Image 1: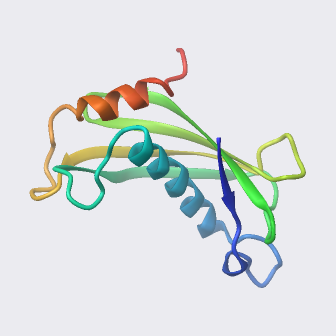
Image 2: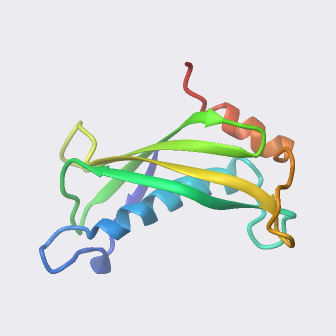
Length: 133
């Protein structure tokens, strides 16, 4: 779990977090894990992750000011790709406000072509998040 504070700008005119911000929370929890646990060098590393697919199902509102708890697991780990599964939880409910998935394909930074197998440290970090079958 990663706690992500909402920001004033996240709310829309309807008084809740705008749907596009949910994807930002997805990006935040995923990239925090990749950098801290997987050793991903977002500035100069040879390999980068590109989003190939994403999806979000909204169950309830989030609003400023509150802190969102973002849960992260891996639903599928391929040779050069990963499908993350994310749950976003408000401070006031045990049920997720949103659930989604996000697919990264790891590619060579310079060519944007397949990097082959992802780096070992990155794979090891992602393996710790794999949900059994």
